[in-house]
Image 1 (cartoon, one colour):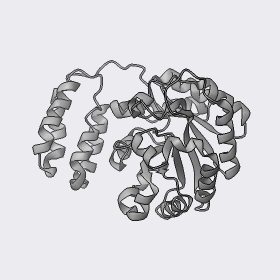
Image 2: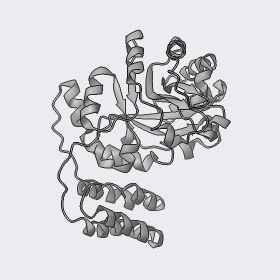
Image 3: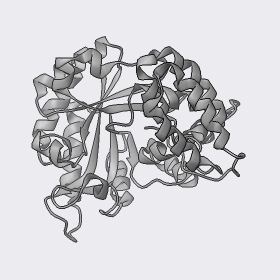
Image 4: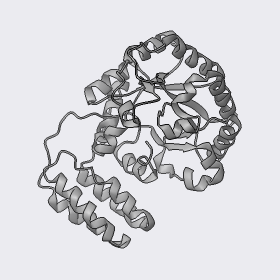
Length: 331
């Protein structure tokens, strides 16, 4: 997620789950070539970690992938699903679904880096919103071409991308979900792994989908309530039929686990603190906790941010009743 899943947010999520695959923000290949240290910085504690790249130039994406491998990434995801106007003007994201030959060339080029290459895509694209059925034949040809080029896994956002007339936020909610088309892909390509994405809003649904698909991706819900991630290892263990004995962290546990990280990252203390704004989602006093931090952070010296976080917890009255909230298997 752009401007969300930076390395500090990912470090926070890793305290909550050992097993989930975490995704970076989408980074354009040219940004990597210009300043790899800035855009690809990460910690080994974040693994398993997937780099998501954007771009439309096979040679640039090949070189960016090689740099990423040298910096420790073993899996790289090509974004063919973002419908924003800015991304479209750059000729990448969802509009690449209209060019399966080019995307196949990109995948083949990225494969030369030695990394596992995956693709995140929509079930189709439309220039304007219509009531037409998604073109499944075009979707099938797109997936087949990329599989032949060496794509190892497909993350299917099961909505059509509307390229004109809808904002990115609307593109995540207005086009109807079509999990049935993702199921058809899995049936037509039984040898390929497919991960499902889009509108997965509760733990029961996530677990059920993991029985059908090879993975479940969820993003915005974790931004709004990071503690949704606390149960992901339990969900994965249930699907794998393996015991999970690790205790799930509470928001208080997470905050205190992050305090040493805040203290070790003075230049980023304010960014880390903002990532902790929503960890008490659903708790009495959460709104006052968020408001206090939002108002006090701008005027707080980086050396005092950890103390401010602890002070803010005084607004949390008591532990909320546990509810069955959505839990992702990857972000």
